[in-house]
Amino acid sequence: EAGVAQSPRYKIIEKRQSVAFWCNPISGHATLYWYQQILGQGPKLLIQFQNNGVVDDSQLPKDRFSAERLKGVDSTLKIQPAKLEDSAVYLCASSLLGTSGYNEQFFGPGTRLTVL
Amino acid sequence: KQEVTQIPAALSVPEGENLVLNCSFTDSAIYNLQWFRQDPGKGLTSLLLIQSSQREQTSGRLNASLDKSSGRSTLYIAASQPGDSATYLCAAPGQNFVFGPGTRLSVLP
Image 1: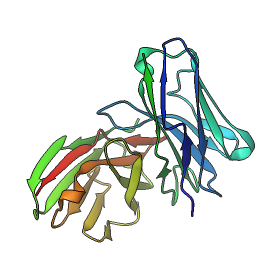
Image 2: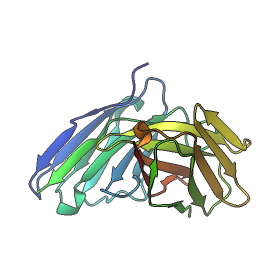
Image 3: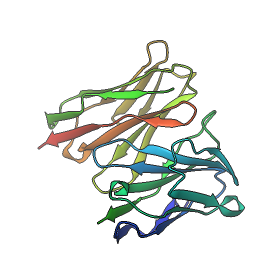
Image 4: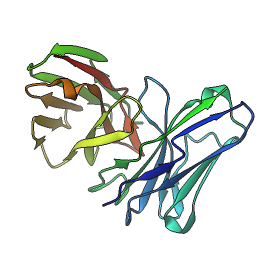
């Protein structure tokens, strides 16, 4: 079974530029998560999708971050414009269900973003 | 609001020792709790998922327990090996999944 795929693996941009990350979850997984992990910290949830709909985006900085999940499968996360403090690893995860029930999360390898 | 803490922040042990990593959470109304391993520069690998109806789960040399009433989970690693060196994170669902900051483990040969 293929795991969660993410691209690119690494990205270096100047501040105020824009960047986009892509995620392909495990086939059949209804729930998709985007996390931000700053060095030395645990991942912080940015947004959670259940199929096409947004379940939780309370910690997403909506003035610069946006995300979409087309047709309930692939998802993209965009930052525009980027700030220095956005330097982090962006992790995508998927699970069969949401936060209730049997809902083991599976993570992709992440995208390491460096903003100069 | 769910908050998750982990103790210790870092741990260094000689090979062969048994060790315990601790995870505490504030909202005990959880459906499950999940333990992950993260190697440097890599994503997270799921180790164990404990359902709220369970008290513990075992996989090889790993054993995780869950005590909802006290808001605690422990990860027990038996006969540690250098390959176990990594950061171990626990995650508990609240409104969304909340991760602890992790315990950085070094097993010395």
